[in-house]
Length: 528
Image (cartoon, rainbow, N blue to C red):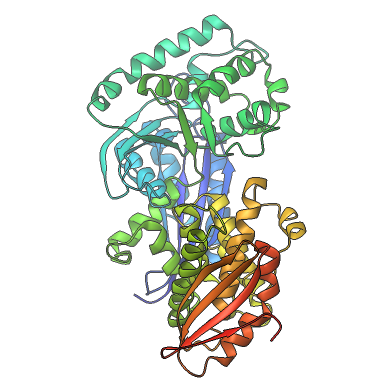
């Protein structure tokens, strides 16, 4: 397949989302745009009549037309569009479909609830690193809730229920000012629990190790809880919502007017009138599934449309036998034509230095940090594709915005910043000034960046002349780096000498260099 641009549009009950991607013939894709607009397509539909209102259709057609124009301006030759709960239940869905075809130029496929659950699972799971765990995937839309259970590779359970933030809020109207009484909330929960009864019964036989929430409702609840209950804890994960916090949050939301809710820290004003209904659905699911916490993700149905498209086109065979993380890293590396021979040598040397420095007692970093160093070593030169001058800054930008899958935002920030400092010293003051690294990780970042800097210097000629590198302990104040090399490694030794002081400032040890040439050993003392 030749390179092409494809647009994916998800027409939901509450909002319309678009994703535009450039798909390359070498299994790569680059996200060109990702946007969302609130349209409230299902407004008024669930309170009786079962029809889409004219003004809601007008809003949806207008937004879809804008998104189609956006996709076309980015070079889209094909646009895939699907519609979900509000459209599939509407008696007059044909009015919307025909207008979208006539006015926006798109053929919209109305998908069943279980297909929506499958696509959402694809979109979310393809961006995670489940590492053998079984997860439940929950998406609370405006008109329906989709649930899936699966591993990294495949799903084992799919279901869709007529429960959504907008639908439930419409069925159980609040007081005139938006407050939800205890009595109304109890009735809301009883209705939700009963609607979920058969689904929960069908899920009992499945193991669930963790949970992920992919909807704007769950994301917003997590953001509000973090602002209200964990503002002073910089280490609390921003993508985590606990059942305990949700239980504390619901009374706050319930007892507030719509206008008061809009002013709650973290609240999306567009969701203020329907957030209680969404919270009730999530609370019911977490309680009944014994789910103490749930991680949020921005990925969802539109990303699932992309993954499904790639699978159907045969463009996503991945790299056999390796994780979603490594697959994603290798795709980015090949997209920007990284010198794979140099990258592999740098990885080997960096991991040699990591392992031997740990054995020598220079640091206590664990396997997860070793993995981050590996990915940083693979990607450290991606910025050279744009320009060699100052390429470490280009590498930082590409990694931060490269759609790496299976990583948390903090992990991506670590990889990007390791690459950013692979040619120069990262001081404690500079580390403190990096906004996307949490305080507890700054010292780890300095260690990893310095190890990558040394490893990169040891293949300065890109010829692999340093076969092995390892740290040895000389005494409490001194360290030795021993190198197995072939003749002609002067450029590497010069590079290492340039960064000797950087090592000493990072680890507070004087560095000696020992080189083995074909069985002969020489020792170079500092300053000689």
